[in-house]
Image: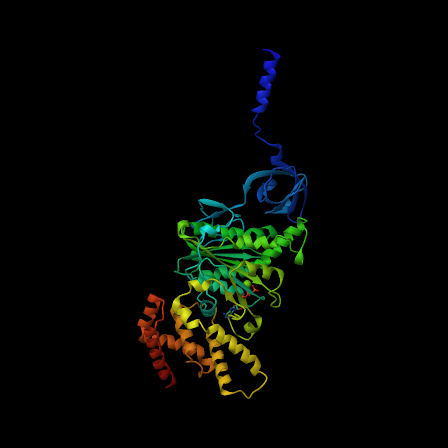
Length: 500
Ligand code: ATP
Ligand code: MG
């Protein structure tokens, strides 16, 4: 062989040399601490990629620096030390999805934590995904019934909507979300409850409540409690929405609750500061808006060509002293389609659920509201606003004219009707009749304390003697003049018997 041939051969060999192990797929730990590892030598690592540390501890790439990558650990960082070998996995974080998750409690990585054994899943999904585009969506057209009078009447939610529940601590935020889940029984809507940064005991209580009301059958709970690492709290909502997305793509309706996004933002802030990202307003990193927008954008109603599924999102945000102009509240208010604002004053005064009808709105849900409930509640918000205005005035003087007294009495009756106990969602038909009773001033001369008894008895009366009215309401979902007249007649009759 000539030397030329040999060198050509060698050249060819070099060209076609397949490098099985690339040097930049393995790196080593430079520093480790607080659940954050700085790794040298992973030049081609991707953002969000899973890294394998010794002792089967996984980490997720969060920072791509020029000469190193920053990763957050999803396991015990005490097992890792400087100089340890780190391998790329070339996959992003994925979680199990599908019907096997119904009735289960899982952690942020989709692993069961309810002691009911392994989850037999057949599919995994990456936790981060680009939200469905505008062309694949359509507007909301089906109500998501919460079973809570004040919400279904004044702040209706449609399937595919994002409605924020916001208020100070201990104002009944979680209660609204849990009641809504309980009310989805038999309504063809699967539920995902994501608990972020809560106490273990509260999550256990919620799961027990859901079980007691038979709601775990169609619900998955994703839990990253306060005792867990910040990275797990950070990914928990994305895990939850990935589970929901699988069902949505099968054409199903899903309700997801994020309880709560304030703690989620705090977990992300912790991570970011440890990763040495520069702090901005309220020490949150600059991309904290994107944190929640990319999460909530994944809730939508898909159009018929894409299977007609939906994800309704109920994010929860905690305020400090009712301040809705703080950073995280304003962000999430601007991302969602409305908010249910809960006031501690109302809550402490015994008005529960403590919904402030003036500050609460639903920007799209009325398109999906049942016509009958829309009809009886159309003037509710204005009447309540009038009442509140007069109420604050009337505190100063006692000599009120008869007209003012009337408005006040009517307002008080309305407020009383909107009170509702926890774990007792009402059917649409019952809501319509109760609000109709209040709106038609049947309650204005009834003692405040007696109103709930009156409503119970009125409902029983109609249920026993005029069941056809209820049947008609549930069949047509409308309250036309004829039905309205017969309902009024029935209620007149009841009022007479009640007085006597
Ligand atoms: P936190 O800020 O601690 O998460 P929260 O705003 O989620 O609180 P909840 O835990 O839902 O509030 O409710 C606070 C308390 O009020 C609970 O003890 C709950 O049982 C009670 N509560 C909530 N809603 C009602 C209601 N409609 N009727 C009676 N009690 C209620
Ligand atoms: Mg709560």
